[in-house]
Amino acid sequence: MTTTQLHRLLYRSEQTNIFQEIDLQKILNTARDKNAARAVTGLLISRGLFFLQLLEGNAEHVVETFYRIKQDARHKNVEVIVNEEAASRVFPNWSMGLIDDTSSSFSIPEMLKTIDSILMQKEKKSNVKIVEILRVFSMKIKN
Ligand SMILES: Cc1cc2nc3c(=O)[nH]c(=O)nc-3n(C[C@H](O)[C@H](O)[C@H](O)COP(=O)(O)O)c2cc1C
View: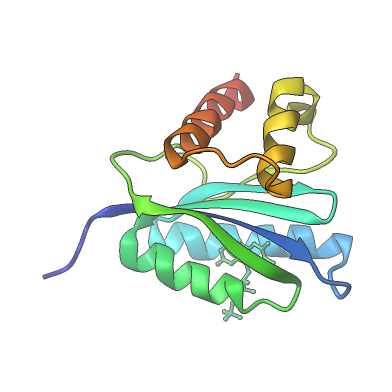
């Protein structure tokens, strides 16, 4: 039996010193190809030295993709924040969306504050809250 259960995984990590700016575009290109082939969707936020990434899709594909990413030497201290079954996707149309420090989305003060609090882990929010926040952001980003 193949499992078609929809799964989501959100993690945070930190750049290592081998990471270079040009890597972000390389990562994005690879991510978009590989994720599209596996129907994995999500969002990558690059904020200062930190990454926050949401992966969603078939459970096996999400886990396989995450373990591949986790081994990448361009980041470290990979910490899973949310790892759960999902009823629906937050980013059904994005094989991997990107928000970086140059994105206008970061000019939404509420968004910046929330992202920073998740990244710095100053504030522990429930999984439901974090996913709902990302869902609200996904609508704001698209508009
Ligand atoms: C922050 C970060 C996010 C990444 N996101 C993805 C992703 O969503 N999908 C993906 O296939 N690879 C992603 N990568 C790249 C993988 O780590 C890996 O380099 C790539 O999948 C190629 O793997 P391979 O050489 O084993 O084929 C990411 C890397 C980093 C550092």
